[in-house]
Amino acid sequence: ALPLLVGCLLLAGVGLALAWASLQTAALAAVDLEDTGVASGIFSTSRYFGSIVGSSLLAGLLGADLQTAGYASVFGLVLVASLLSTIAAWQLR
Image 1 (cartoon, rainbow, N blue to C red):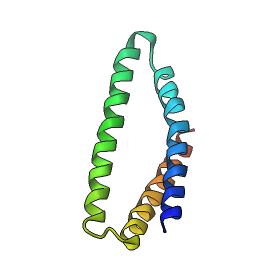
Image 2: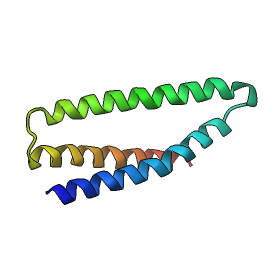
Image 3: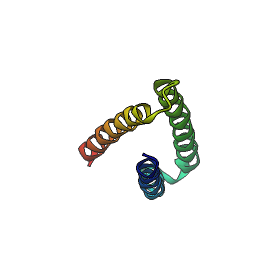
């Protein structure tokens, strides 16, 4: 179970690392030059807020179930959220 957990976390980390730079570039390119500072601040604030709320919700869902079943449930929820986010992003294109 540990190699699967490490593999999933590694895959998620690589995906997030590749996504953040392009997301910020796209967000800043969508605003006028004089609004770049505000857009950057809003982007960073929303990213940190989402990380805090998301990790808190997942910790609450995991609760005291620190066994494989708890992690599988959390990874399943994250997978569904990721797929929904991907579909929403494709709709914006």
